[in-house]
Image (cartoon, rainbow, N blue to C red; front, side, top):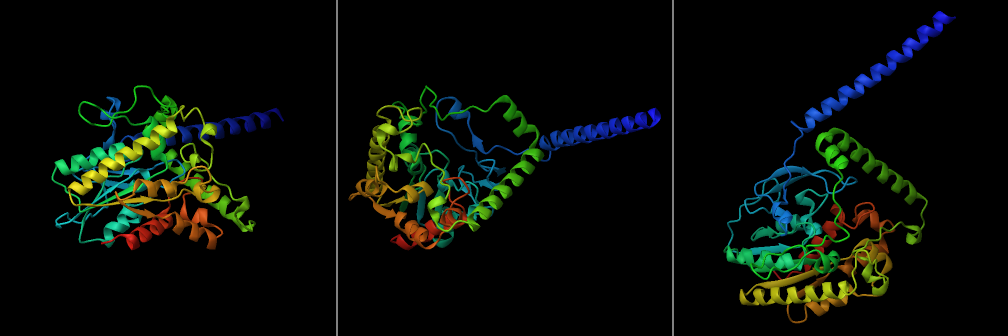
Length: 375
């Protein structure tokens, strides 16, 4: 009996050691692959940001890009100007230019370039050179600088398309400040509440355990979508739909005094609104000086469609901004129309539990913009 117990104990030890060695081998392989074959260049250049200025995309860069853990990984390509393009971008050898400005929506996080609304617009207007200046967290302060810089470099716009995002209010209030000396947008000296530094542990995992990160992300992405689809089977209308609310977009349905004070300093909302007004005025003057048509495009987040614009009308704000200064394309009504006829509208147009458009939401916006451009 004692002999049998000893044998069983040795078998358990053997199996445990085998599992441990296999795990150790896997971690070692993951570490090696992550730092060799899977080593991706980071196409975001933060050197200038660390010096207090805005960040930008590196030139002629190619990498895999994942916006968030629950987002799909997509290929990211940039051109010689440091702008996002498709894998095989058309030559910019036409006589007319379209300059497009925006933030992460315009950049097209989570989407292949061809599925972004800029990619769709570019394909439709193939007799124009299309320049996508969109980068995550950019706002009118940066758009204005990039527009001036492009003109300085002889890229003169025939059409300017500026996609104004709800985040722009908070970004103008706390992320970007004007540099009085050289005009390059700077970030505040004091870090705002939303600026989270990566922990050493997270940075180590992202750098050295890419296989594990990729596997977990894929599993999480599909499980979340499966769970959401299962929930939708038993949902009769959108009253029980789970809507992601946000710090940046809540001002359309939340009273100003009730905005999260950790992210909205006193007077910050009005400061952001005023800065947007000033920058749009400046951009409109530049457009007029260069005989450019200036279009301002506004669109809704899922929470905007669900809760409405009870406290601040983004639609009226866009109308006010464009009064005789630009051509407003308000896509909110188009999304509201889709919402009325599609019970599962949120998951059909937006990434799960996120404000960004998936490829169907991007196409809905692109088609509406194309239809309303006076080209």
